[in-house]
Image (tube, rainbow, N blue to C red):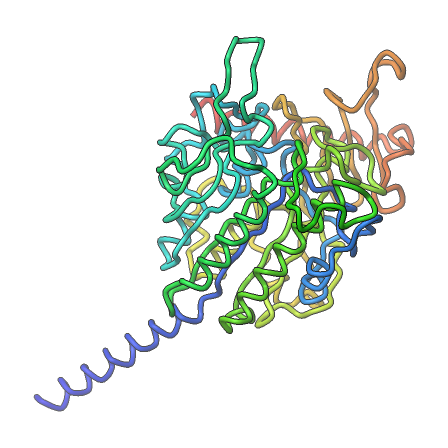
Length: 444
């Protein structure tokens, strides 16, 4: 009787040790999310007037995407999509952005990426701009984040007067978790403060426990601000200075990870929440708030030295909707149980980009008013309407437009009349998807 008991005890010890090893080997995860940074606002994407040595180094360390998208043209819906893996309309977060007078936010019943990772042993933190509801029930600490350090909404809402409803917003609040620790703070120090907090958390992390850090920088959203250290740093002016300070931020985080000897097993995802207001989207057409490519195709880099081959440039179409299911898969979650997620698990592609091909799938462009305006499938992109980015007085009523993004990345040559079958097919796909999404989101 003693021998089986001894064997059983030994097996339990081995099993516990393995589980501990699995937990310790889970990758740390950092999402570095900037605000209104354009497609061409990185050196490796063709930036002019400033340098981004740390972003560029990250791109060379992992995968740089040429066709990386966010499923919204403005802040709030884009952030909601990133943290849920769902089109904003599916979760009723699709119309415009939240304001300091808003009484709604991301539904706490939505299962966020932070909650998923926390359920799988991660320490979770949100640093920077939240913008998914400033009332306590919607704030990060009630959405799966153990820690929050930052501001509840955009920096342009600092002491802003809304004439249409006679609302005076307060000086921009700054929180540590649920405690208000500052108001109307010096915005020149925002990038620096976020970065210092990120480095501090990396240094003070609990050894052996993986962490998830959502670092959502306020910049380069207007009004632009930069610390004295970076003022006048670029030849482009203030905007270039701001981007160079963000680049410094990435460098500081990578340095901290290396000093802690955890860089090799840390996934870093870098992208922007939408296209530029002040920056550049060259050679793309359009900008922030528009469903032209410049409004939703953004720089995208994913690095994980232990598992992602370095020096890869990919033209596969990837979106922030894919982040949720992909990370779920990588940490051992059962992605089959995730409900209503619109993104795909691309983990196999990330680790074997030279041998794995992603399936062809549509990407739907929803305007800030919630209307479906365009779709991409493969090399084709069809526009059926335009709420912004089209001058009706000068150009007349918007006509259905089809573009081949492989040969016409700037969306200049409408070839809808030449390919009626493709136009009809894409129109049918749009109608079917929008109806399905609407029925599940608003009628069930």
